[in-house]
Amino acid sequence: MASTTTEQVRSTPAPAAPNRRKRHPTRFTPLVPAIILLALFMLGPIVWSFYGSFTNSALTGSAALHPEFIGLDNYVKLFSSSVFPKSLLLTLVFVIGSAVVGQTVLGLLLAILMRGANSIVRGVVGTIVVAAWVLPEIVSAFVGYAYFSGHGTLNAILSWLHVPTVDWLFSAPMLAVILANTWRGTAFSMMLYSAALTNVPTDVLEAATVDGAGEWRKLFSVTLPMIRRTITTTLMLITLQTLSIFTLIYVMTAGGPGFDSSTLPILAYQQAFKFSNLGYGTAIATILLIVGAAFSVIYLRVLKPKVN
Image (cartoon, rainbow, N blue to C red):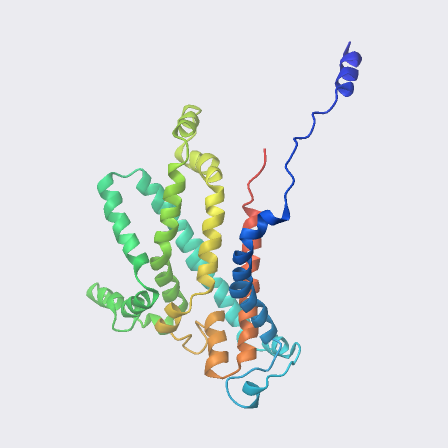
């Protein structure tokens, strides 16, 4: 009986594939202007920057008028420099400290806490957090400088509490810029996570509660897996935005003291526009582009939604 059923199933013809309409090439014609603009204003500068990293282009001298192709000399000089590994490490510390741990974790925590709070608390906390985000970056940088400088607000509070004070921008410059960037950008991730949490079905959470799951179990087994796509998008957006931050760090520390807060954007600016080594600075910018691509690939692979 079983063999007969199997033969019947095998003999059953497969369902016919849906008759799809042929895609005429002209249907993509409206996209041509957008593709040309993307190639002209996004892909073009990247290709030109990549080529510039293989030249001795400079802002002054004969190389400014007639830059020459020098192959991998800029990259050989870059990887033999004692400053570049330190700058790359500081960039990773800045991104992980202020973007991954600071903005992402703090933003998610605030979104979860505000979900269970009353409307008054949500309004007050939301206004305070968002107020820092709407400030222009240059204003946030001056606020951070005024707070962490030797005669700033933080030392004034510590003096009032009879706690020894230090000049944070000289003693712990990376900690100061990480805290300043976390303060400025947490609102963005908080708003994204708040929107994602509203889409988590309450009946699923109630079913988990009936099954005996506690708050932590519901968070890690129900809520976080259901907002996995939002976590991936938020991490990518915040990471790429943090990698390109220049004004905040330059205003607060100018990359100093020495090179103690020179992230890759600061180092690229110093080499290109302070020491006129435009080709060398472009090579640093290319490395920064590769670092951003590496972070994006890691996020997409680690946080890729599982297909059931």
